Length: 355
Image (cartoon, rainbow, N blue to C red; front, side, top):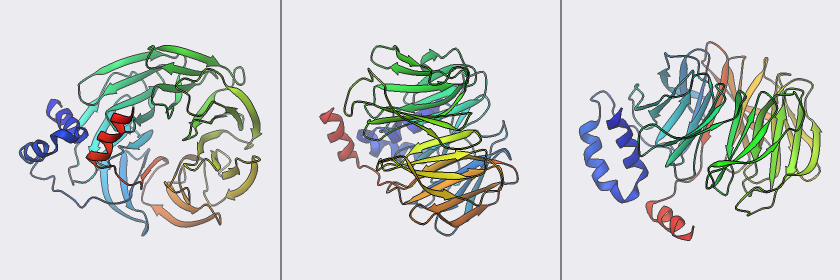
């Protein structure tokens, strides 16, 4: 796995691009042929121990990966669309997106239970995870092993990165939300929206202005934050939304900060307008629990994954399902979509200089 981590690190470091091309050619498995880099990467996974890649517009599965260790709980695509992280029990496996290589190129082991959250910082240099073992971990993709670990004292259900890049927020089954200050390397804030009620999902607005938590009683709590702040010093209660009659399994703010999507055990997906928190659309069609969702970068579309074994692509303006992705044999519980433009090496360098 050392060679694999070096491969990932080389893909992260723009200044080493030329060397990476030469070295990767030597490291590449003969069976792993390069594939065209798609502008839209869409993947789903679940309890049939497979990860499936889809042609988003046609609804055709063009690649299937076997994940023999366990079910797959969460998926995340790196910002550059080169790698896919699949979180299982108890490890995270990383696969190449643009080759036919069926084998994970890296494995991140260290959790002792289901990994329930995975994500990357915007430049893809480090990864964060959360687990039912009660910990939040940070992994430097340029080095091996876990770099930091935070104890939540409860089974972690959700972890998100604040847009300021210096804080992680986690939620757990005990109903706690914690803010982890990465600069101070400590918990800087704790709150319990509803005592004894598990928080199933967290989402933070792309401009840092809002945080939403969805719980197992179907309620979403909304807090106002200070946009542009380097630290989350204060959660100002803004709204309490009774979103569903069943569990809220996922809540997600749209990239344009206009909509809140909620998915539920009641088989529906709902879109809420953030101006007044009124229900804008009910997306109906799934036959069982809807576990996960992800917006397109322009917030025009939403992809959902369900226990009915399908994923669906919805038009947010009409509420219609315009594609059904069928192929899983058991519950599909996670989906990942990256249809954003990839920053060039020069863009990344300028971004780093501005920080």
